[in-house]
Length: 397
Image (cartoon, rainbow, N blue to C red; front, side, top):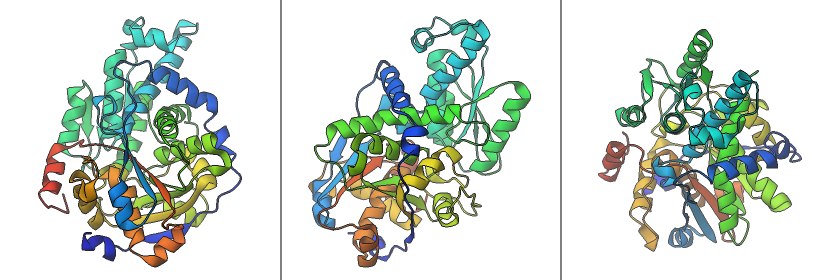
């Protein structure tokens, strides 16, 4: 095992789980069911693989490691394909129903029956890459114009992928949170519609739809597993992925739902700081992390409502252990299936490996030889140049 794992400095904060109410109220069973019915009807839908990393599990001393590989999702390379595009469809449904003064169905929009009307509704969002790509893909399918705002550190490859789907991409000089603020300002000034995975006061429906779309992934996991996991390690970011998965697992398993461990870059730990403060808390990002999709300083307030009840632990990891984890997974070390993954996808796996090499951390997280750990491989290779550099030995890109 790479020495970086043994020397990783991880920060841990205990959550304070409360009675699981938000997992049913913020995201209802009907929210998840509606999203799954719609998304499973899309051309190209297929469940993504749940990969057993049995060799690695034996090496680090846990009973199971199950890795949900979202790389093949709709050809877009990440779980975000389930969120942004579905939320776009729901925004169009609400706006068209209001304009036409009659109910408009999701299937009618999907079939192109309202293409001329959709062409008059501009959808916008800020992104680190994957959410914007999903929104652009959805807008192309449904016939709506799309504007995407990206920050200075988003790679050229991810920018080009969104442009190839027809989006107008605006790059700013600030960070992700600055791009979010500019998106809101320009949308309000121009009558555009924000499709964000982040909620704020007065803005909740699209983020709820985004998280409902993510529930498709969770339901696939639950159907594939024969036993409930004891732990699930979930990437942080704004919290939407983690909250959606935690809620879906709680709804499915009830009292047998796994222990939820939130994993963030130590350079962008807004959820860990929120846990310490006892309320959604913003942090300033002084230096960008290699985990581009997790470089977020402002948590989603809606997601936090779920995580403050469901998350048992919050940990941060250093960038130094990310590239070695990408290489380990891609090379199929210890006899496992080779999986090509992006930097943000391996955050949970990197945390599990590092924790099992630190007795105090493993004990704090309740990780032992009986643990069955679920991991969400949130993206495949969304930037081939970065992946190539990592596989060539670069630890910083």
